[in-house]
Amino acid sequence: MKIISKKRRVLAASVLSSAVLSSMFGSTSAIADESKDNGKFYGDFRLRYESASQDNALEDADALTLRAKLGYQTATVNGFSAVIEGEANIELVDDFSVPPAGVRPGQFSVIADPETEEIDQAFVQYKTDKLTAKVGRQVFTLDGHRFVGHVGWRQDRQTFDGVVVKYQPAAGFTINASYIDKRNRIFAEESDIDSRDMILNSSYKTSFGKITGYAYLLEVDSAMDNSLDTYGVSLTGSKKVNDTKFLYAAEYATQEANDTFDTDYFFLEGGAVINGITAKLGYEVLGSDDGQRGFATPLATLHKFNGWSDQFLGTPAAGLEDLYVKVAGKLAGGKWLAAFHSFSSDDSVAGVDDLGDEINLQYTRKISDKIAGGVKLANYSAGDAVFGKVDTDKFWMWASYKF
Image (cartoon, rainbow, N blue to C red; front, side):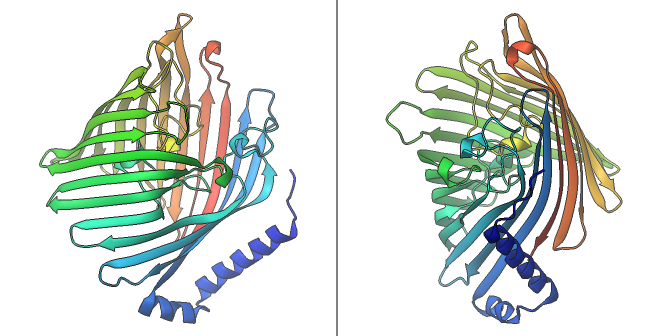
């Protein structure tokens, strides 16, 4: 395991540690006074160890990284305010590869946390009782991150440059309309993408659940035709019967890529909360167009879906079906979660469709309002060899502090 000892990284780690200690023990009274009167400083730090082992020729990966975010939010004047926020990720142990960022490609298994320093958010906001408009670089998420998310699990989270508008003309009714001209992805600035993305999403809350309709019209800013147009509708809700809370969700979307390929998306999930235990059974299908192209969600928080080992960050050309069960609860002051996924392709390849299965386990705990930590693991067992997947084990342990 190689320990990084460059002077700037040691210095940066020292500065970050000093900032944490100063915040914890109250030596930043000048900042606190300024925050109270004229806005507020905020930040968070996350130290994380991650390992990845695959049944292939790549070396096992180990990463110890320290992510820091520091920001300032101004006071609101006549509805206007602004946010500026910097983010840095420091590699303390760097035995891992990040091919999209050009970091040791082909040597280790992938851990997608490259060293980076960048402006994470910088936007101006105008807000009234019904309208919120933001212009600039910002975090932007919709509907549980399935189509638009911030990928906050990674140390360099995803943000977007553009205009984001949220309008609530009446109780329970919300309209979101946004234009994105740059996707600031998780692989450092070198892998960011200029785009021309239109995001339209409207929802209405009823007595039986939230109904949402959307149109996501995505296009990378290049000469070639790479349009990705998605239209869909979803319902999410819950109903309490005596001491049991029943959960339900359904969604359908259709997608056209490059004006050539047509695919569909289906999602059904049912569950219940009984005596503090939440159990869910779900079935998600990212369809295929005759094995040529799979349904894609390039702006999503993909790590959240289809298993934590990240086997399906890109949907296979043959599509993906994910049948899963999740169980969660509380234990010893923290929260636990266990999940099992059974994967198959939407279209068979060479007469087979087994894409493997995966077990996920997680335990998280808040020590205080500012300090938290957790551990989690993913164990993926590959299916039919024709799909090119291999057995994969991943493990994480982390601690975080925010102020």
